[in-house]
Image (cartoon, rainbow, N blue to C red; front, side, top):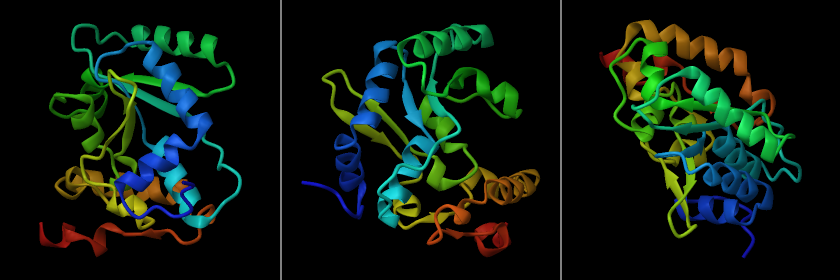
Length: 200
């Protein structure tokens, strides 16, 4: 079965299973055996939007985000070593590796409890998606805010953005800089003013 349109999370997983390039990236990341690892953000989001737009060619990604959770070693140089390992295995891929047990210090927030918790703090719901392989090699999806916004080609602020006034301009500047509708014209960007932030 070839997925031509994604309607739900199972369709999303099937579309990825049919994508040899994505499965190779997941296999390369999985080979590192990092704790609580996921390939996330644009890797998932762009695939969904490409399918929904009927694109025959993949939209290039500036990086492939691999995240994991290891509170026992939060040195940035450790992340760089993992990136080097991935580059050696697949040099054409723009790898980026981040330990979510460290990222709260970068973002000046309370410590994250897992990779999925870190994902939930991403600025947009459509970006807070990750893919991994379980112990039997089966594809799994992490979607702390669900996949509905991404599937419906919509960018909305995550609850952590809505709850913090200082995050409002971060979200607005990020979506302006990314200019995703120039690539995916069906995309609807929900501004802070059009969300439940008005009720805070």
